[in-house]
Amino acid sequence: MELGSPGAAPGGVSVSAVLPAGGSGERLGGATPKQFCAVQGRPLVSYAVRAMERISWISDVIVVVSPENTETMKTIIEKYGHKKVTVVKGGITRHRSIFNGLKVFAENEFSSHLLQKPEVVIIHDAVRPFVEEDIVAKVVMAAKEHGAAGAIRPLVSTVIASAADGCLDHSLERARYRASEMPQAFLFDTIYEAYQQCTDYDLDYGTECLHLVLKYCKTNAKLVEGTADLWKVTYKRDLYAADSIIKDNLSQQVCVITNVKETLAQVGFLLPESLKSQIKVEAISQSLSKNDSHLQNIISGQCYNFVCVNDKRCAIQEIQELVDMLEKSNIPLLYPVVLISVYCLIALGHLVLHFHLMEVPHYVLEIPEWKKSRSRRFKVCPLSWFLTGLFCGICKLKHQLDYCIWTKGKINITEEIGSTEVHLDISENNSFSIGMEDLTMIKKFARETKKKNILVYGLLIQCKDPLLLQETVNSAAALIMALIKDRNPELIGQLLVA
Image 1 (cartoon, helix red, strand yellow):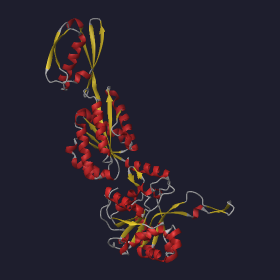
Image 2: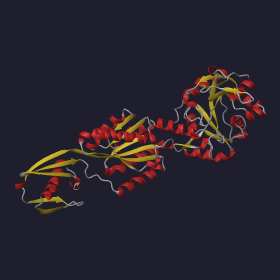
Image 3: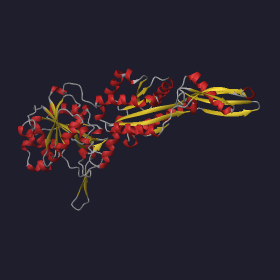
Image 4: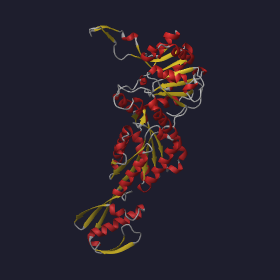
């Protein structure tokens, strides 16, 4: 998806591209021309420019727009960091706009400086965003040999001709005909000569560049079988289709980053395993600060989905570090990045204690005070008070947890003759809770990162029974995949529960 590394063009020829983008989008409907309609937050024309720009052996990309949209196009180029792009004012028809784009290489009046004339020039619609380098190279090679070449596709529907009375006159044998697609490529001198000789009628009503070089230069174009993704965005439904394709392309890989904490590492192992059946997974099991180089390699490999399994106390800090790294990489300029912060509340086990009631008449207990570091002494008789204090002591002794763990513990008391059975559900992170203040902070952070084209979501993995942890993680994986595939900006800052 990024600019390619320097390389030689097919056949060793110099190559440039012209992208006509001056249409009004009448068939699409609406006030915005289709080439400027947003798909995943980015104008359609930007995708077509990037498709050509990332091919290292294409020297210049000429975008031809209507005069009233010149500044809009320049703003797009600046915002999305496009390189080697020149904006040219178009004419009143498609052919006149393409001719203006070609003149940049031959006539000073159409550019502040004359660009180096290429041996081969590619012509490609600005509303065909999914062209790949392979088909571009094939068309360029064919143009070098034959003077002109263009991509084609089989006809989907049968073409018929109607008589003057509106009845069927005849139909074409579909197997013999093909649909003309883009990209097309030409020896520059051939296509430029064709346009120079072109009549006003052809300039105003013609639509097929291959036909012009055949008519005016006697050049028979080589037809190259294209791929299914060369279709043109014409109607509003095509925008939805383009959006779906882009989402699918962005949902091929996820990076799972897990904190070193023991319980988090357990989830960090199970979660990637659960995701692997649906998406390619890269897993990092240490803090971000210790994995900058590894993570940078993943980001540079065009990963647009990240899952951070966090401890609540450092969650925002970890996410902010990742946001900073993504910003420096400029990755969010191209497509929205999904960043899912996962919080864990996982039970470690179940402890059963037996006490004889007659042996616990009165006790003096050390019970830590809520949210304070010092302790208070209580002389207690009620058994429930005693058990609460005992639970606190057991937790601190066995798990070295903080002073407020016991307040979230679960105690079930069942009395029998002469004895009491106490069930303690001990959780590694029982102190975890999210209040309104936390939710407000998450939403505020998500709104800020959305401006950077980074979509932040929250996910809570909560499991009180260790035997059900795998099932809970599978549920979390399903939610993660739904967020990645949908990329819904309206859900940012929300906390989902698995």
